[in-house]
Image (tube, rainbow, N blue to C red; front, side, top):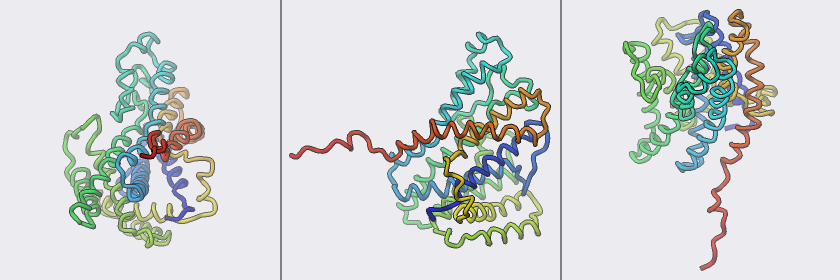
Length: 350
């Protein structure tokens, strides 16, 4: 992988697109869509492609489960804990329609804190009850349990493939996920979506294949074939000959999206490659976007259009993301490569 790349820029753009996309349901207007996906859903899938590619690379460089999980946890949880506590104990008391004492002793407040443990809970008592999109405090949190589940699944798939001496086991697993997703999400979705640990498994199945496709591209070292010109060609083909059904569109997306995203991410651009020079704000922007958008709607009395909501919310959420990066995420990520204290103590000679 090139040392100079556009990953920061692509992730930042994806997080901004999530905010733009969410602005539509939050203002009761239809989201723009492409190949049967809302733009915010496409942006989440972009995150999963990039994550799969980078996480597989990280695992192969150091296939030690304890250190691998430590790195993943230090990336996910510190910023997540911060926004959940801010939401429950700062935003909630400030904006609830309930008396403060009633809010403080309402069991739903502590229930919301379950988000820290990746158990999705979306409501706080009396908060955003009168918003155009009522009740939901942070609808973006749904994807984090799915992401973490992929973190857990990837080493297992890699180890099983190695033990069975099946070089393309990861590719076969990715293909199986794609097939299951096409069937259960596009062709025959169940009337009642199964839920596990608070997560909608059908929604999870919609995005999970993209993580494994990204990982497979890294395993097969296909990046040497990825160029922006190839991405433009595939996008042009899909634009000129659009798929005739939702399931066909998703199959096309399994090919076009990973190739396009990684072609752009792995290339170097004099401007885009400098997107992360002040920090990696994409995760914080994703975390704070929805919450800020709901606050903006609340303060504005639900009078903003989707575009106005996005334009007002984006710089505020970006400021929150910058604070999150510099005061929470960056200091915690600095612990990634620190060895345990016991490992630093020199052994005495016997």
